[in-house]
Structure formats: C-alpha cells, structure tokens
Image (cartoon, rainbow, N blue to C red; front, side, top):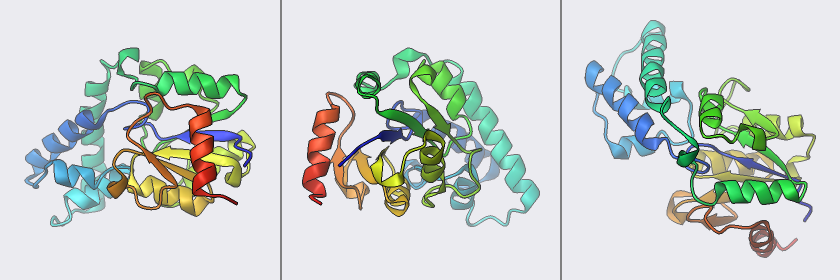
Length: 220
C-alpha cells in the first residue's frame, strides 16, 4: 500500500472556522428572512457557497442576481470574522502530523471547497507546509464530485489510488471514494458513511497509525 500523498480538508480538520461560517450565514439568513440553525448549518459541511445558498433559501424564489448578492454579502461577513485568526487556531495534532508526513517525503495537499482557503491557511501559518492547494477556485464542480481531489493529485503528480484524503464531511468522503482514494474521516462515524477509518480528530495521530488502520480496512 504505497501512500504517496495526503490531501487535507481545511475546515474541521486543520482548523475550525465553523463558528465563523455559522455566524456569517446566520446574519444573512436573518436579514433575508430565512430559518437558520446549527442543524441546517450541518448540511453545509463540505459544500460550495452556492450550494449552501440553495439549502438555506430553498423556500425563497431567488434569481441569479440574488444568489450573487447573497454569496458576496456572506463572504464579506465571513472575511471580517477570519481576519483575527492566528497560528493558535490550528487544531491539536495537525501541525505534528503535517511535519511527520513531510519528514517521510509524503506530499501534502489541501482540498477545500472554500474560496477563502488561502487566506485562512496564511492566517494560521500552514501555507509553507502544503505542497499543492486546491480550493473553491480550482475546479468547476465541488464535492461530492471527485474533481477537486483529482485536481490536487494531478498537481502533485500522484496517482489517486496512492492518495489519502482526510475529511470531516460526508460530501468529502463521497468525493474521495469517487476519486478512488483512501478516505479517512475526522469526526463522528455515523456522520461519515463510506470512510475507510474514522478518528475523532488529529491529536496524537501518526503516519504509522493511519497506514496500519488502512491496511486493516483494505487488506488487498
């Protein structure tokens, strides 16, 4: 099982901007008269900004101009919230795992649906640890389509079957499966169907542990 590259989702895996996304969407939903709560917010995990608009405002008759205006407004709210992020916002275990992968000549990619991924990565000080960044600008079709992960693998020069994806969203796990990559879930197993293995977070996670567990999950 030659693992040559790891592709990380950003939000919920390397850092946690969920509260910022929630606050930004909540503000827009309140302004536009739509219901929004944490349960609805969970449906937005791993999907694009436009798809999020479609979920939140499914009962509203929005035209294209409304979509563009709403996405821009939400992004403005979100950007104002993430400006204060620092390296302290890196989740426990993330930096150690990235360092270990680099020391073992494992390529590191980012596969995030966010169009603010580079801004966040710069703010938390992880940009220099990532070889290839795939974000909301990289491909036309986001998760659960496999395009983003395939793009990152191609840019790294690695075959999909030799890539491991670390994801906290069901849409990301599905995208990894459809890309023919190993799928490592981060979070609660019941919310990550299709993952080869699931860990609660990255804290204490090592390359050896992941390799061993994936070998057990896929003994072929």
